[in-house]
Image (tube, rainbow, N blue to C red; front, side):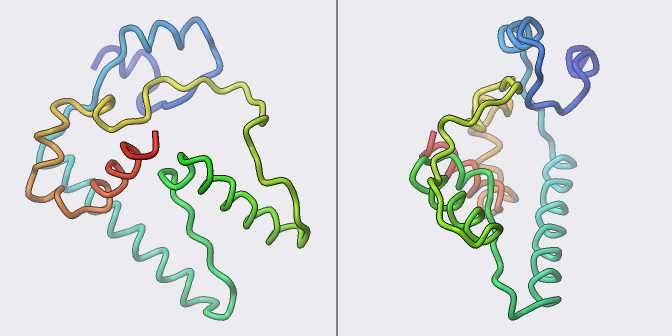
Amino acid sequence: KKRKKQYGGNLHHITNATLNKEIRENGYKINWDDALIDSMLEMEALSIQWQATVHLMAPLVRYYYISYESLLAKDERDFWVGQLVGFLTEKGHDSSISNAEGTLLQLSESDCSDRIENYAGFRAHEKVKHSRSAVACDLIATNV
């Protein structure tokens, strides 16, 4: 908990390479309980509600939903980036983003098992089994 407060809470990326190295070497995993799972499920329900609201606001407008998990596999990432850029610019383009440069450094591995304490117990929890978060973690595990 001290480290979480020290590094600013729920950060997943930073720009400081020295701090990044320290966090990756001494990082922490999320401790979960029923209250956290309930909060996760409430956020999933809110996400579903917003997706439906946006879609109903303009049913004739083409709708794109891209999740973080779908961007992990190169072929799928290239497809979706191509779709989005084509939609925004009305032009074709090279959809590869492999050469994109940035200053953010990833603080932890992508797999949920690297981020969540006792991940097997979390994934097997009755409330988690069929959640969107469980599906997302499964997709991350197969695409990394």
